[in-house]
Length: 162
Image (tube, rainbow, N blue to C red; front, side, top):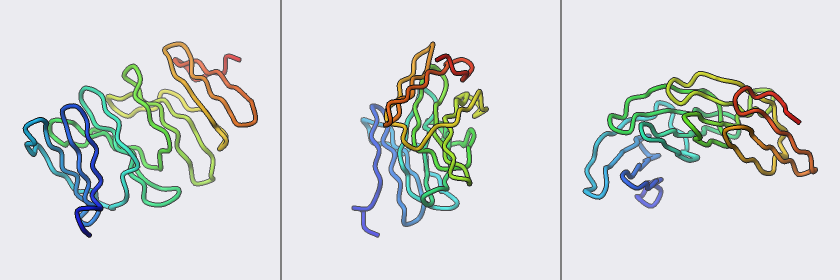
């Protein structure tokens, strides 16, 4: 595989490069372009995207249409902090939490709120495949569907408030 197939993700102080030929992820500190760690993904796959906070990269890896892994890796050392099995379609960092949409083995989609420090699930809520738009703030999570339905959830508990 040529270098043209490398996946490259650039952030203010870091560049993360995934080589699907040997399943390696390289992290470089910018602007000096210094290698700070390299790790291998056991099962290969494709990186669907990366989000981050002050301490970690959160990497969504997909193996096929329904399977993958969501991986929290320390920015400075490349050490795995935690993982969640499954394919993540949406992943947002907000206020020390991650909001993820996963699909399970029965083709059911779930919005999951996860503690970013240890990957523990705070709450989950089933969502329909036709989710069109969402927004998150400290009080609520707004879910809008293509058919016009709107669900408003408490950010703290995941309970419906509408």
